[in-house]
Length: 455
Image: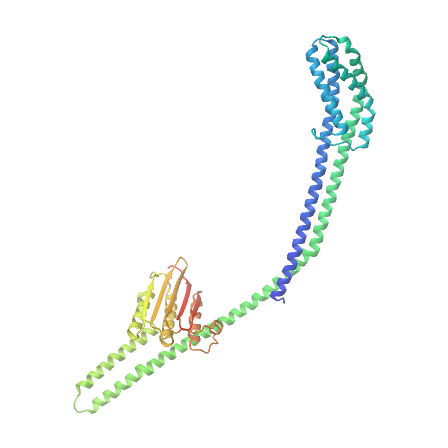
């Protein structure tokens, strides 16, 4: 059986392990993603290079086409402009593929095979470059159409075009082959990364998830055991509660019995003696009859008071609100204590059981105040919301030092212990909450929170 401190230690260990496991998975996933993105960027660069290489072949063919059109001389000015623009694009693209170009987003060539292929076509490229340069020079400085001057350079373009195109086809093929190799390597890399990730997950399952499963299973068994123990404890507490209620009822019976014996019993005895004295007299004394009548009236009142404390008829007939007002009225009439009642609870919202239990709690609290608090003022506040009723009983008496554990365990040897425990148990019978606050010299406040159901 683990203690709470052991559970906290184990929980911290698993928290760190989980944090490390998640961090490893996160870093590994991030590394895999960055690596794959890097190779995808390389694939984009390969596609980019293949497109430019294909464009270079197309530009070389277009260049020769415009050169032939210039040779014919039919549309000399337009064909000349088209030739010059195409020549510049062709030359720029060739140099970009060979040496790299930031503007065109073409990296410097790092492939030895492609570099060798470019070396092979250096001569055809140079010859075509020279011919194209001469033709552009002629087009810029000759104001008259003179096709005879460009014929040799057009022929030089034609003579080197085939070798140049063949070399560019080999370069495009090599770019495509490199791209396929990169794709194959990327697939292989993805499989390796997937295998590493699975391996890490297996390690975490073996070293973290499996121990956690065992720990959770043990914890569940312990919780079941704790639940069984709590049920046993609840049964014992219920027995203690029942005993406390029985003890309270017994104490209440003793109190009522004492009041009947010491109050009503003594008055009845005195009445009996007066009547016997009256029987012994030859002549009836009027003053003695008056005393007998007054004693009889007092006995009737005292009997009604005791019966009212046992179970007032007004509680059955008119409910808790009226019974509480009558209780406050009785306190005012029989003591010098002022009682202020603020009752905002509507009639009929409580069950009969709730009426009786709450009345008994109020009765117990007021009796305690009258006997022990030396108070001159009692305030009773009763309020309600949609779910609960709230009752506060405040006095301005001498107060006392509250020992919650002793009072609630029924272990207090003080004069307040059993009565407070009785009120607490009655409150819990209604699924309510009981609280008491008191300070010596500053009075006592008893608070009740009781759920209710509207009839």
